[in-house]
Amino acid sequence: MDNSNPFDDALLVSNYVNGCEKSLEVLINKHKFKIYNFIYSKVLDRDNADDLFQETFIKVIKTLKKGVYSEEGKFLPWIMRIAHNLVIDFFRKNKRFPIFDKNQNYDIFQLIKDENPSIERHLIDKQILNDLQKIVVKLPQDQKEVLDMRLYKEMSFKEISEATGVSINTALGRMRYAIINLRKLIIENNITLSA
Image 1 (cartoon, rainbow, N blue to C red):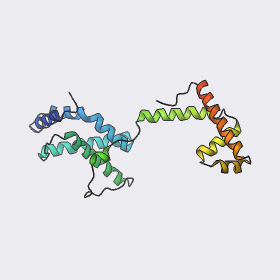
Image 2 (cartoon, rainbow, N blue to C red):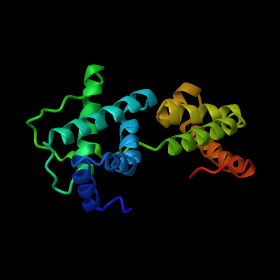
Image 3 (tube, one colour):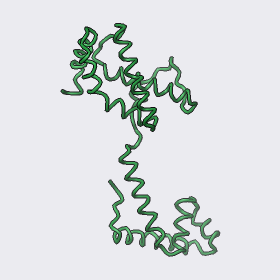
Image 4 (tube, helix red, strand yellow):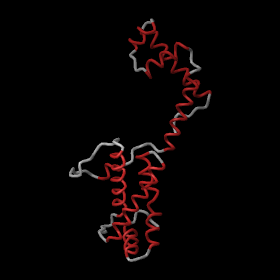
């Protein structure tokens, strides 16, 4: 079944409203991954995502049973809007989310667009960071110190030279050698820095 065909959704909704319970099951199965993943990407907690997912479909069922849903070939965006509103309500209750004015004109797709990194991307980034931390400790102390000050403390080379008591050129040189040595260690340790 083509998940992007709105006419399939319209037929399934119509069949469900007319008493075919199986049509609702098909609709849920058809869209569950997209909806669940959207909810999870926002709340980042399985239990809360499960609850909000169930609440979404409870609202869908109630609306369909009342006969107040007007089919315009936009079933998935309608469900996503319900899920989005439930996520906002969830964060409002926890006072962790900006409140949107209901009268405000906005494009729902700007709000539900998922720009969070996937769990896979997060794990890859974490592994790369762990690999880099393991090789940074192999650098000479003076290079580690400059690298730490420059990258993590965001100090200028002037500030680094003052803090370490060396000239700016020496600080720059230490940073240069730190990068050269990191490149060698990355190759020697067969570390991949991209997915």
